[in-house]
Image 1 (tube, rainbow, N blue to C red):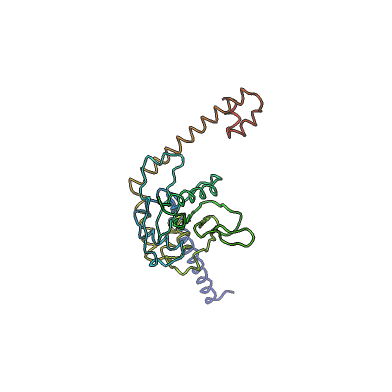
Image 2 (image 1 turned 90 degrees about the vertical axis):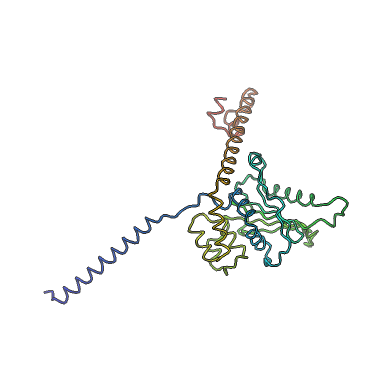
Length: 304
């Protein structure tokens, strides 16, 4: 026979059980009510990237110091040499919205690249060569050419290694003697960033891991976490991001870029159709081979 005390204990346990279920239900509802807010525009958007940092050159200077691994107070000379971003340039096929700077007598070229077009190694070397050679003033000797540094932040993997940061110089193949210190190239591959890249970070705004995490941010929650760790500097960057990404100027430039990419895609498709027609007329390739060569579907080749 169950005593009165045992009944009281059973009732108490039942009440505790119901209370726990109620708490769990509230937690689940809170989680459902607050979905993760994905960023409409990531900081890897090159238009947003250039607008944000050209307009906030104090933040750009911080970013530059982080990548060069020097205290920001040691940067005495700092000039952005290509601050302009003409709307008509966004329609050009080879438009690149890099930021070129003179930093303590050195040339620094900073670029964001999202799409893997399979030629980025050669492309980045070409842009280094152009920046380096164009710095030779008339009447001066080659020895006067400045050190030229290219920093590329990539939204795709480029090298077959696990490291997210690769640095290149020109070295002799056996004794590793440096030919010159005037070529220096850095590649930061965002997909290779470890998830905990900033968890053990000191929180210093001059730490490039923190900046890379910012460029790799995908949600508002990511930005909040970076702000909490990076303090006032990261708060200013996030505020600048939110402001620039909502301006009419940015939205218009983004529209122009989108229209240009659509027009380019349509032109390339039309060219592929013409090539398919020619190949069908020649008659030396099968329909499947023509489709493979032109990147068209079999139906498109048949209709060409």
